[in-house]
Amino acid sequence: MRATLFLPVLLLLSLNLTSCQVYREDPTIVGPEPEPRVNYLGKDSITTGNYRGIGINTSTDDAFEILEAYRKNKTAVYLSAVNNYFADVTDLKNRLHFFDWLVLDETFDTPNGVQFELASGKVKSIRLNNGTQLSQWPQTADLQKAIATNDPLEVLNKKLIVLSNSEDYKHKFQRIVLGAKYDYSLYDPKKSELPWAFIYDTQSQGITEQVRIYFKDKKVHYILVDRFQQY
View 1 (tube, rainbow, N blue to C red):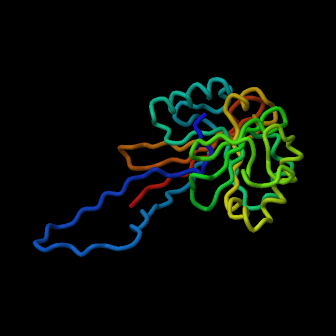
View 2 (view 1 turned 30 degrees about the vertical axis):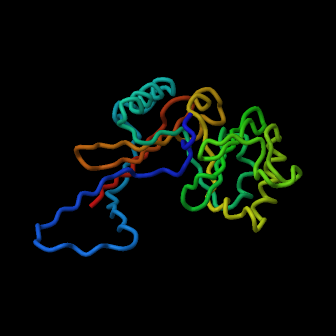
View 3 (view 1 turned 60 degrees about the vertical axis):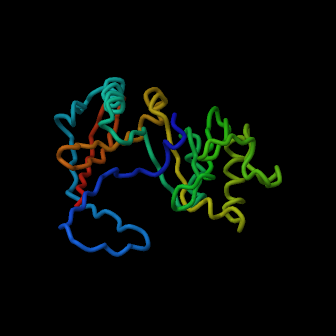
């Protein structure tokens, strides 16, 4: 899994600007470039038929194969079983055991944003966004307060609450993301209840589709599609 898999969902659209030729030097623009404007085209709720080959009542295994094909041919610019974003660390208490990754960072991605891999009810590994492996986070904190590998999830939750209230570390709790892997959601009955999400780029049409697939009894139950267009 890529280290940046659970970073926030991005709509990867391009903006082409054209202007008439002039015979004078243009003034230098100082400051950030203007953000692209995105037009929301609406939502589709699909309960019959199919979405791009993924039919209602398709099994999770068959749906997974189709999504993997999207990922491999780069039609899907973002792919994840589930993405949950939180602003309050206390909301994590009853959710941690459903997920495989926890990411803490500021409003925008930073090199020292921290990623925790979760497995078997414990913290399996810790790394920063820049790839640095850690045995504990924060690195300089006392071990009684720092989150360490092999910490049980109950201990992890308590330490998260303490650190989120610390003046030294609370800036890393501006964005909290929980993520789960596809292979787990295929077979874990709890995780299979969570939606799979991806962004499908229609490319030639200039439209991006944000898709969520909901399952019931290991089959596609319904699909929600939000469509966006940059202008």
